[in-house]
Length: 428
Image (tube, rainbow, N blue to C red; front, side, top):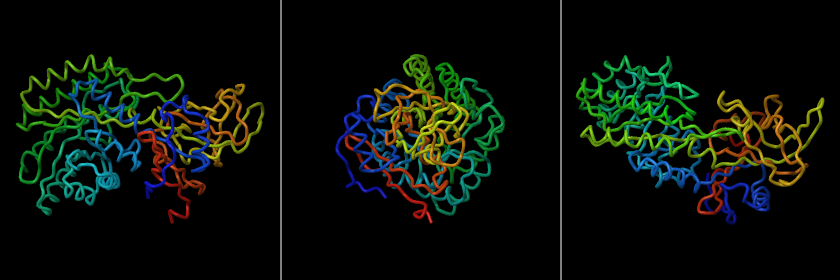
């Protein structure tokens, strides 16, 4: 449970980790112990506004909760994001507790249960992204039972394979969405049930980690082509067009990032043309998670021990893959490679090539492999930067029974305890 009375003094600049005095991190470590996560909500808010303004307010920005579902963070983003993208009944509950307007929530995912669909329809979510004929038929049954129309969009698995995305989730055989060539039965079923369903539009999520603006543009153009085809063939109107997301974001020292200004320069005229030409009021959406949050988070852990092993230097810390699976390179192929590490306690010390090992008995528990760091000493604080997404909730928290870390939120310069640490006994 969040205790909003548990606040610490203001921090200088949570997102500019280089500018934050060491003493402030030391204070946090003393107050909350280590390890801990710290997220800068203000930096995420600035990022949301930057994206929206770059596209001249022609697109809505939905926050993909899966990237970081911390309740205090969601509450900070509630009035800034245009909506929320969720993928489970648990996230639906979290969105409700956070105070999001349910009419601005989209619900995707290939395995929505009857109870999840029932809850979504009862709460009148903005739309359910239909991913199978079974799902839309179940929405009709539930709608009739509740006496409430289900608002739906169809998630389309496009025929076009967008090779610009490093992780491809469309254009291939995949569990997500309805294959474009198999759309007709689903659309016909929707059109035949106007008393139970409100058709909102389509949702196309081509993949993740796209660094090429041209790839995003081609994806959007393909979405608009699908919309035009649906409307011409069925008479249905696609008021909402969810273009997905997948904007590329760096996590290692040498990674690049999607150039937002170049993307906007190419895409804005296309958005203007499509929306103006169609004569229909459109609600075009990008759903973004990692692109908004990754750089706004930091994971801080403390050096417990060190050792030399056959010519290699290891520093062992009290954190590891049980809190931050992505930093250990085990969350997916695109996140292999060292996250950016910093020695917060002695940034001016002579550098040493070393590996930062986590506290578990798993040999893959390495937060940094052969990295150059100012030589740590026992008790030093080591920071893993770019840790704002797919951290705590994407990790095996109960592995070996170590406590979970505190999650702290920096909002308007003040530190808030967003999630308290828990022991394995707390989960019994």
